Image (cartoon, rainbow, N blue to C red):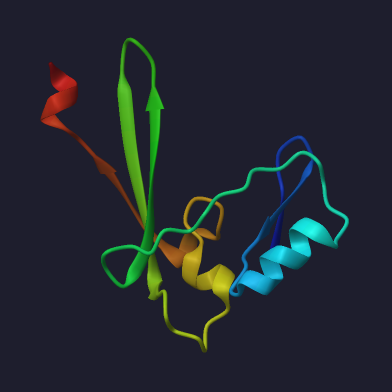
Length: 106
């Protein structure tokens, strides 16, 4: 499953989701691809919805954001990019919230 976005600098960013190990094998060994990429393994969440935490940190402050996808990860009738996307996907697919930690305030 492929999802494409264009950022503010008009660079094309492509996200690919692999449902099967053979799709990943084909991607790595047989297909042409960009050499500028990030490979991220999907870890099954404890609950039924994918979520990701994003942290913006500097010595002066720390912001923690979480996005949780509305769709259940095992809903095969929904395309993978709509079940799994968080920060890289469309806003309507996820619930956003900020997080805080008492550990960070010390």
